[in-house]
Image 1 (cartoon, rainbow, N blue to C red):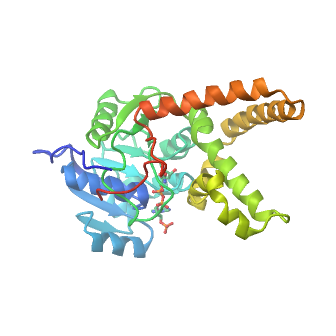
Image 2 (image 1 turned 60 degrees about the vertical axis):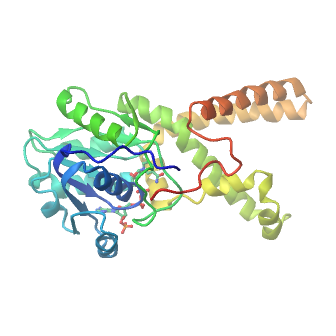
Image 3 (image 1 turned 90 degrees about the vertical axis):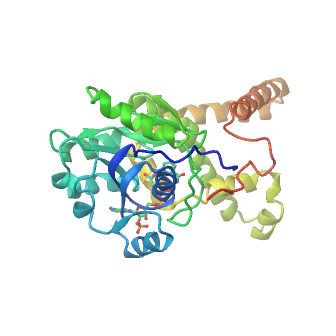
Length: 315
Ligand code: NAP
């Protein structure tokens, strides 16, 4: 992706920013925050000694520690970048150290569960503004991140009812400075939308790659050799982080099951159309789906390149 981030700021947006979890998303935020000078001081917190050591080597934060309570002390903004299932434990560990006026945000792919896990541990005067950058790759860890990951991607904010408006505006400004387009919606609506646009597609990819691996009449060698027939594109999605995706399905259970129910009904209709030779039905559906793909490309959320535009440049 070409370099399109703006120039560094003269004055930072926040004094002290703490990121918890320096994987793909956390380390991408760290790189962009540093490059754009969005924080007076940037603190990296991770429960893994190896990740903290790597963050120091990469020089992508001013301070790095495994001690979450010490790391978030005096922070003006804390962003949880850990798997969804770890958010409650992190919030419990850091809650007593947060100063009044601090904004706590996150990047979790599920929002209702994160709010339910985090809110009870925040002291009065600390503002929760959950966020979900709809951007990522199938890679994990601090080396996988890059500063332009969020450029021209959507970031969804899901402030709980009665959230502090000034805090929401500051988190909104933060993401816009990273190059994101921001939309605000309820956590419940977010979870339903993402179930169909992200969670169910991942489940289908995990399933189809698993099924191909278990086939007895087609060899593994043939699956790999002829993968360009469509299978290859599912394998990229099915290579995504197992911890992250386990947590997403466990924490967005209702919405995923609702969308899976719809999907099962529609697959039954497709099977019927194939069985009875109803070519018109198949043709109509494939024409509609092609238009959706073209819409995504014209919105700038994908390129028409055969490599899906995912070549990485601009670390
Ligand atoms: P990742 O690369 O696996 O990084 C997660 C990091 O958090 C790891 O360094 C992990 O350390 C650390 N961690 C786990 N539990 C922790 C705890 N209790 N305290 C401190 N650190 C902890 O994951 P990611 O892809 O960046 O995803 C992070 C979050 O972003 C998830 O909630 C995910 O839903 C969301 N998200 C991901 C994507 C994507 O495409 N990847 C896109 C949008 C949003 P260990 O490895 O040692 O456990």
